[in-house]
Image 1 (cartoon, rainbow, N blue to C red):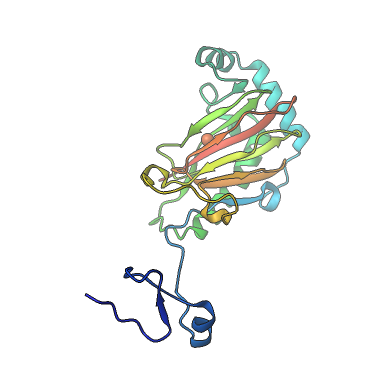
Image 2: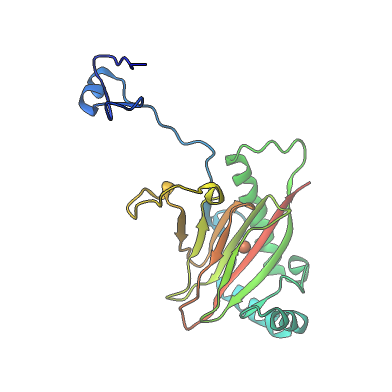
Length: 237
Ligand SMILES: [Fe+2]
């Protein structure tokens, strides 16, 4: 069946049922195509100190090293699992209770996560988002943390303790990539919101939050010094 176009519409190709309007004509006539973003992925980026008492960066870094040195169970786990550097993830589940500086971080994070939940328009139904895990990561030169997500949680994130020159950014992946079967790649100059991978380079004292289903990784740390961060999960209860 022959398509019939209004006077100011032009088919992209004569045989094509999809139509476009010329920009000049459409602006003049007020009929620009309407394109909106749906199913948006939010990334929250703030200074940890924006809420709560400021955390002393040097004290925090010293605490991370001191805990890592004392945590023999954690060291053994990292060695057994081939984890580069150190993480307290599998060995210490109560950092805020043991160390005041981590309690301070928790108090700030609670407020950041509440602000992010508001931005996400979550209906928590009388429940709340509560800290489930909080752990230290010390990544040496050449260390990576491969692509993963954080199951059983709602909001995950990281605050950054040491980011020497050359320390890896955080690499985030479009959550729809598994469905993109035959889609072409995006151009390098595509807007950030259309890119399949986005790299975020936080600074010391920053906090990043994302929904826990968002796949992410830490590419190889090219800095000679260690990259130190504190990551966490919040659950809904
Ligand atoms: Fe992670």
